[in-house]
Image 1 (cartoon, rainbow, N blue to C red):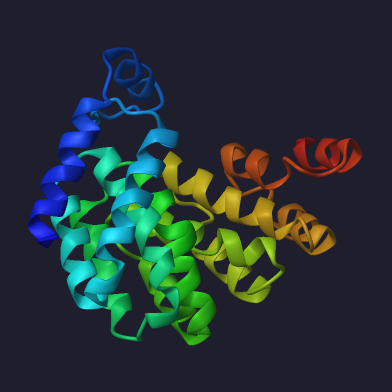
Image 2: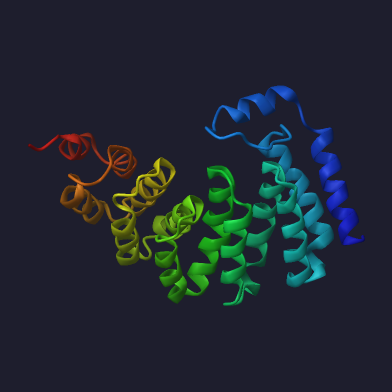
Length: 239
């Protein structure tokens, strides 16, 4: 298959499987206007899997080019195809790919769903392979781009579930602690919540140390999985 023909066929299948009801429902989850065909996630996954079988032998460089072509379309579902494909290349990731991922986030990510679907596994897998690049995530916390700041946190969601990078997770939370953007607050709160699965005491202690400065949105996310008694203690206002 000619790669560019592959992109055309993916877009055609997405349009053929779109419906207005799904599109309207999807928009309800976003404050900003999104570009969306209106295709259910399960169907997007099947389409992504179908065409992955046809492009997987093309080589990483060509697959990256195809992914960027999908991002250029601006549609959520096309971005989700990228997120389905790239984790399959995790073993082939190289250090220089981090700069590519950063550029894609800055240039193409414009809502939380694109951010999370890309960062949770693609960037997360990269960080697990090249742990020293967690320092790059810390640099992202200083960006003016809200999605890059959110990415700094949500890229550690999967490693956090495994109990990894706890010190770095607290370091990133420190840098984002007083961020004024609600999407960033939810992102680092989610990161802390996942870290708390295997490090409940450490995360609870972190929340208690910082609860006076931590926005309530982030705090609620961070303690969501904790026992009721700990939740109540964390939520209690101190005067």
